[in-house]
Length: 268
Image: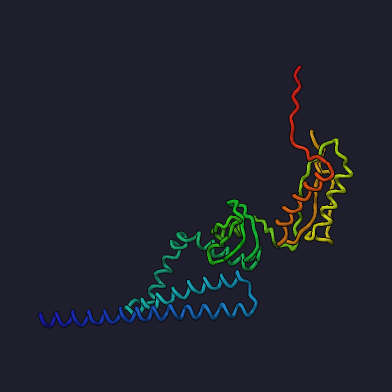
């Protein structure tokens, strides 16, 4: 019994030492992974890499190094890394079927970084789920959007790569169109000159781009004018709201009434 007890004690002590060393090595490995990630991010930043590429590379390195760390710790407990790889290889078909969505998202992330349909900071509208917002992160499997009302939307990269989307902010300038309805009794030429003057006086309207006011439609109860100009992307929304307000104020000052939808009922 003493001999058995001594053997158990020795094995327990040896196992305890292995567990303790594994914990120490794990903590050291975590710190090394952080250092490696920081070095890679700084190197890519100095090379003027895009933020999306830096985020993607960082998440990929993080996942790969943690897998490597776990396999090294498993080897310290007597598990053969080659055997683990062989088992994973033999189960590759089943694993591939189980994680085909994740693999599709990984491939989608690579395509997004390679083809660059959008980058961090762009405002996009995707057709798969109808979500839209500003791209804040491009990770291995997912892309994060920030909506105008400050909500975070997480979209799979596979869907973004395999479906159509609109990149609103890819170009430097963006066209603005505002519909203004005036009555048929109003002076059309005076209304057009008034609205053109609003565009000419706005400081954010692009001078080198076309500024137009034209008859867009002769509706049943009004004449529909289209007020068109161009803004820089960063000025678009503030400029559109300001021009819409100034159009109303300018027409009021000239006594030109803005028409509204009406329904005429004739009783016989």
